[in-house]
Amino acid sequence: MRSTLQELLATGRTLLADGATGTNYFAAGLQSGEPPEFWTVDHPDRVMALHQQFVDAGADIILTNTFGCNPNRLKLHKAEARTHELAQGAAALARRVADAAPRPVVVAGSVGPTGELFEPLGALTHEAAVASFTEQIRGLKDGGADVVWIETMSAAEEVHAAATAAIALDMPYVVTCSFDTAGRTMMGLLPSHLAGVLAAEPVAPLAQGANCGVGAPDILVTVLEMAGAAVPIVSKGNCGVPQFVGTDIVYSGTPELMGRYAALAVDAGARIVGGCCGTSPTHLAAMRAAIDGHVAGERPTVDHIVAAVGPLTNAAPSAGGSERRSRRTRSEGEPASE
Image 1 (cartoon, rainbow, N blue to C red):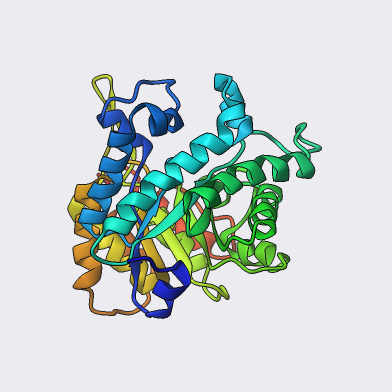
Image 2: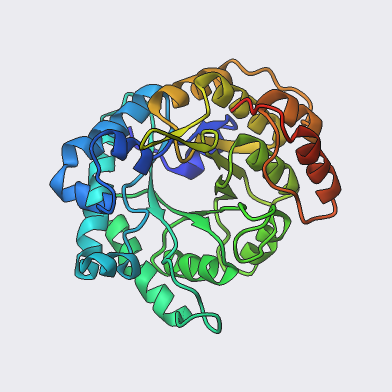
């Protein structure tokens, strides 16, 4: 049963996006340094199994195994010539799972950053970035993706390049950035400024928002700071914070915490809620239950967020920064609920 993201958004309900890719692949056997994108060909059964687990947990949107599937990143593994092949194959695997689902499930083609700096800080030009994203997005389109999901971006220039490629290929798109550096992206973009960056595009995105970062409390404050956006807001936060347990990295968030996060994200204004690093199908099922059973509440304050899901990690650089910073300072030394 195939539907577009536009059609699902038009229903007015809160949509659930999926959880982590890399974290769950590591649990399934991915080795450090091994590109997850290679699993599309080497272990398609494992790729499809994770998609299926997320659909079974209640996901309305599943992201393809293509976060690093651009020539710039694949060249690190001497595989840049496989960009289209891997992108098309990953979209086709997700498409098979979505098409077999008993309800509409959207296939979102994951497009992550190139990992390179734009001129003048680095050597990457706008034209080269657009060409790189075009190759990846063409593969996603050919494989059956419904929408391009531009995620974990830091630079306005890279958002523009990826959006340019999606628009040229007549693909609808979503943009999320990672506001993980004192409430900004690594390249200094504020949550409140993302809408202005996207307003310059000739075709607007279907949604904008935040993903990854430093855990549930901070991304919820980021969502609050995006109030007034002209398009639906996405919140796809990490499952707590990473911690070393022996030689393994374990994320601290529990299913119960992620359920509280999902409900707060809805009250904060998000229309699409999901998980990022550390979010397993078990966490996502708790989020589905929380969304389905949610009774609309008041827009949360920073105090409410801290009380419900734990202290903030970052201070905010904006006019509201003193409030975010004070909540962080007063919480220092307290155990995080994540």
